[in-house]
Length: 62
Image (cartoon, rainbow, N blue to C red; front, side, top):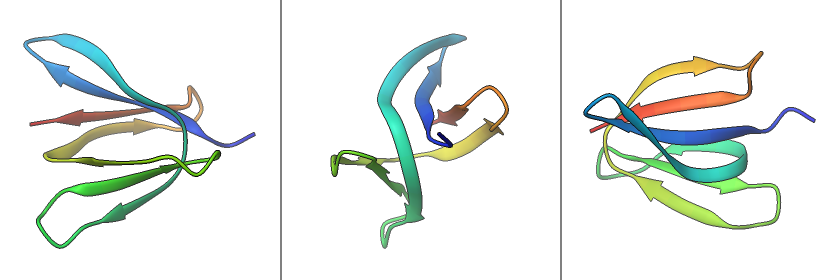
């Protein structure tokens, strides 16, 4: 399995945004559309801070 969990980092704290993210696409408004393996979707505003695919973690920040 190659999916990862996405987190938002704010004030040094990580909050889980979405589990089992399979696809990340930029959207028209400068954010990212996250798509999960079960068909769920979420849009994140901000930027990618770090991707660690070995640990299956994607960190976003505002």
